[in-house]
Length: 121
Image 1 (cartoon, helix red, strand yellow):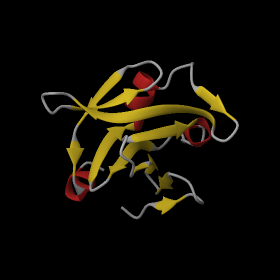
Image 2 (cartoon, one colour):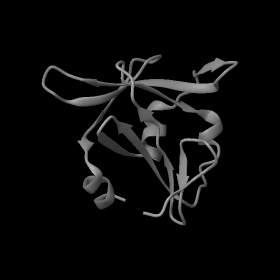
Image 3 (spheres, helix red, strand yellow):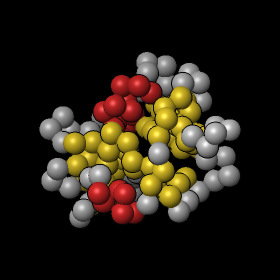
Image 4 (tube, one colour):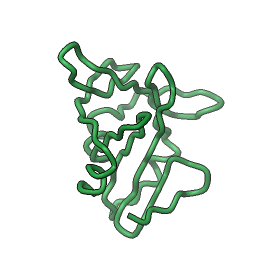
């Protein structure tokens, strides 16, 4: 895909794509999305949210996710600025979803592997 990381951030880009790629490596499966990164999303590029969940991946259309989960009521802290907090959770039936910790909204997703990511980009 030849993505290039923007400085020391979760932003990766190439000619066609803007990718936010938070990594989840904690027992609570949480991640955040910061407004400072979202405002860098160019209108002309395709957007993807690529969540790295230990050895799995979750690939989501970034515009769709923003429409459904990024609201006007974010967290705002001195360390992180304006941001939204999420967790990856699983239902009793094994369905995986992104959980907005403030609004309690669910966004259902599917886990994939490296080949699945490459196929859908």
